[in-house]
Picture 1 (cartoon, rainbow, N blue to C red):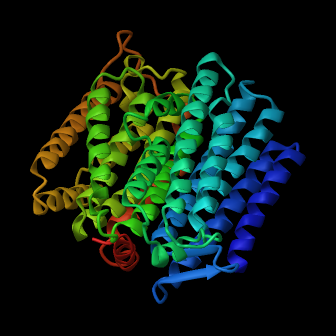
Picture 2 (tube, rainbow, N blue to C red):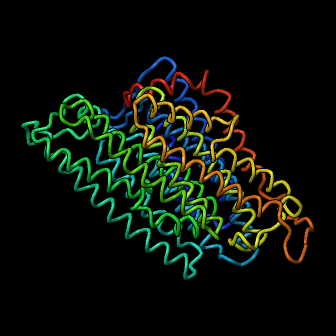
Picture 3 (cartoon, helix red, strand yellow):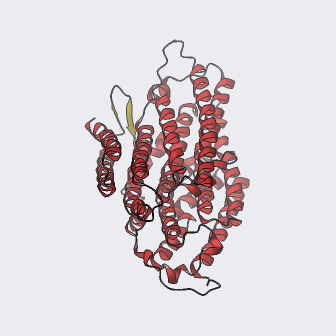
Length: 487
């Protein structure tokens, strides 16, 4: 119990201090210290799951199992990396007079509000609590997307809040209909996920199907599923780099996690077995849209946004295929994608800070001008497209084998084609950025290449750690998460 009280207290205290303390260096340092403590708490909670299947506190309001503790690990780890990156990022923005000290303080206030909302989604046992947490992330990230206050960022922020609010509104209608169709025969419905898991009985199969479809489409807007993805490319393109890393690395995963929680309740009810086709259909649409969009991108931050849509499609497809390999691959991919995409967005942030452009055709010969960032960019690309020896290769391969075992040959064919297109697209674009000469043949090394490298290296360390341990140390927790989702 004390772990959760301490974690939430740290977020609240850091938010208050962000508005009170005027020295941004002190504020940034407090933010980093708080993130470190929260990550240590998450590691402690993970260690408990070697011997436990679940933990609940506050009259079952807070609930952790292997599925949610994986989310907590991703949230606290990526938040820690983003906190480290934000220290130098915000100071540079101040020094270049891009933002005022007041806006820097607001950034840290919103940053911690965003992280706290995501933690609440991860630890909440109440299905409405999960929805409220997602709505909290929308409020915080809207202001963070529009943080630069230029025309494009404000337009992206408005687009984000309108589309995601409509989506979450549809999701809320779905949740209400979901509860209404429970047929529990009582005016007091227990909204705890653990209670619904064992007591849910559909009084009307049609209502339940409609309810889950609304939940899937509504909350799927937050996941970034196509065709509800239109906010994502603009939002990621305009958000500050550490915020983009958190949105892509954590938030998309977390929204899908909420959908999966509802799916777990329903999947064993007779007549609802085919709900997993929603995962397959939206996964394939997302893969097709993102893979072809990647081929024609001219903005490297938008490129990474479409890559996030693709990877959410991969994870969804693994769940849709089902089977041990499919679900295990989906869980593993969600973790690797979180850190791989964090590495990509933060590297992109360094390139943007140095070159002041997001256009791919304006970035040349990075291997000479920014060699450290160039190497990390190439490694991050290999991680995100599923190249061996990284764990993303094994997760994508497991999902492929699962589809073949289940006889989903058309889906497997589309999946394979999209993976090839994304690999070709990334390779073509990144070769131009890293190795091609500019017309002016300027190849002098940029001093900013040495700035903010530590958070990038830390992201890579996490990917390597997952790659090395997913078959041993992390295997128990991943296995338990797979058993919760079911095969």
